[in-house]
Amino acid sequence: MSGTVSLPTSVDEVVKGLADNDYLPDEGLATSIFLAVTLRRPLFLEGEAGVGKTEVAKVLARWMQADFIRLQCYEGIDSTQAVYEWDYVRQLLHLRTAEATGGASTGEADKLEAELYDERFLTRRPLLQAIDRPADSPAVLLIDEVDRADDEFEAFLLEALSDYTITVPELGTFTAATPPLVILTSNRTRDVHDALKRRCLYHWVEHPDFEREVEIVKLRAPGVAESLARQVAASTEVMRNLGLYKPPGVAESIDWALSLSALGQQMMDERSVMATLGSVLKYREDQHRVAEHGIPNLIRDALFRDGAA
Image (cartoon, rainbow, N blue to C red; front, side, top):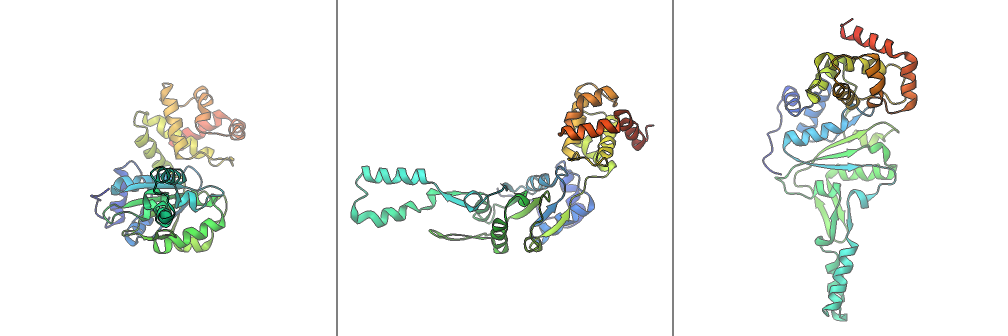
């Protein structure tokens, strides 16, 4: 889409722009975003699941009035899923139509074959969508969970992001008129190669501190009482220090606050915490670990952290 906002001129402007779109970054993340936007460098965001890495790209696209394009990585992904593929069904229909109308005669074979590799039969996947677009139609390209892809795909990404070009042998080379703003994310299920990281700016995304998480919960769950928002943020902070298999992220904090609020709670108590534990902890082993810690102890620790004790 066109009509983009002007590029930010300061880190404070990034903080305000993201906050206006319901995302509250810390100074380190805001600085990394400012540099990525200003220098037009890919931004590699690494951190535990649930800290808001994916949301950064969505919010940036909304703030900058750019198209949001997402490439979800997974084991075995290749260029067919990431870049382009030919629409074989439409090509076959084109051939049959040519046969039915007499256009498939021997003398027309070369022409017909060339027609099969026309752009109308090309299915653009996320990378090509982000690169082959008008100069006045910017995009934010999210390459999500790149750590799930294999080494060969990493090497391909490194080449594609070095000059923002994609070659389709039958059609030629597509070069970005305006390079997309690229956000790569990783949950660090494996180490991503240094060569790809060197191509990017890098930021490790931490869980928010207590006060910022309170503000995030209040922002994303405006109907939740402030006392409950603070206790949820405090309890989640305690849980993250219990050595859980999957520590709760910000999204789980918000879900938990909404769940407790839906039950009419303005303060946490043992019964409501037990009833809603599945909103914040998604593994049985983690729920058992919290139960071993003691729900009364969790509430007490949260109240102490909140200053309500």
